[in-house]
Image 1: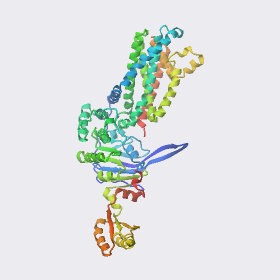
Image 2: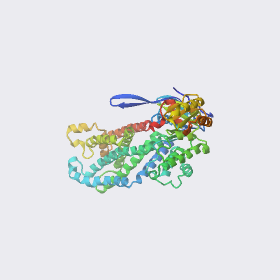
Image 3: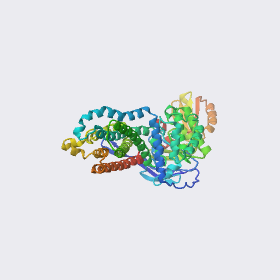
Image 4: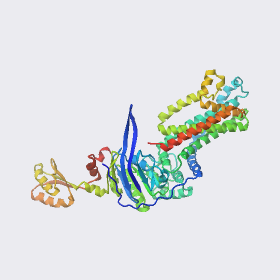
Length: 274
Length: 320
């Protein structure tokens, strides 16, 4: 049986004028989300200290191990080789954990509260990615400054280009992690899945050692790993080789991954059910 | 203000290998006029929140259509969002943020300037008894304060229509009474339309102009609380006799007043009597003349629970 609920009084008001979105509005909304995220992160001293210590520790405690190997790999200077690898690693792995914070926010009802506002769903995602990118940028600056101090020989514009590519791939990872977080809504699922993704990425991208010094089959296998091309691109850019196909391929992969991840992330912000 | 026709929401669930469909909302029609306070009443799992999420554009209806504040929820979701406030059951602020900043950011996402959002936020904090809470972390606030902060979040952009999902669940009695005042003032002071879900009968009774009752995803009744209670046909008159041997005679007298056969159980005789309070004095005289002594007399006004029981055969209280 269905009842129609009839109102006791009926006086419809004319609706307000339809909403017109301007392009500037998207960036305004993204910035509001970004500012909120950043403010909360900066209040957490652990987040700041760990974020800054990461590049320092890697460089100081792992760099010396590579020094004797530099010649074998074909580099005169170990840091010119090592810093770009570390850069991509920081960008990727920091960002892959972005989803954990999002699950906590979802549990507090923050995501739902933001979704009920007229703000663009993409802006809700992009504001968060801007926070992740800023984190990567600060870490990258610390890393590269230390690298130069320790004798890294890299043209400045090569370093800038390398950082830009890293920011792109980091944003892609953060968006994917956010999408996965909103789909699963459980740290218990997100943690093993993130681990499962990280293992092959770490092993097959040539982050610590270049893949081309390995056996041929492993080198071939790693070419199927998109992040290998990203690492190669950042590395060639750090040695100042801007003409090679490696840089082009790595950039294309980065742009492709970023577009795909933002599309996926926006879709989950639009569709999220509970 | 709200007009929904044939709303259906089907969820796919999986139990082991078996995939099955759950019709959480199964053909809901409802209308809410401007300025009304309407309670959406039903047991847990009846489809209240799911309906609310469809009306607030958070969930796309599987079937059916709805216009909220003049806009279609499926094709004009942004306009709907701009026109309504929504206070969800699960809260809306991060425990580690500062209350005032959450209000500012929320207002700005609605397109307000920071100054406007601040002015409006401070006004709301004063009205909702949140003075001095601007810089507090929600985590360190009491349940009632946090719920009032959620309501402030839902009102910062001055919507004409506000949805409240189980606003008083989990609050202590004093905080509930306080919140009822707040909700009543939304309409009396601001002329807002309020649509709230609840599984508390007293809440629906006290707050609303109309009650819409939902069960198993379908609307089973919609009317004013008084009209709904009038459907139950009369007050319950309960006589408890001193001497169980005289229940037969007492039942006969009550039947004459009630027009239906009373229920008899041990010492007690009870029946539904239209306008029970009016019948009782005469009944008492008759009983005294017949030398039937009473231990207690009770006249119970019908409650919304009686309404629910009559409509569905189950009590709302069972699963609360």
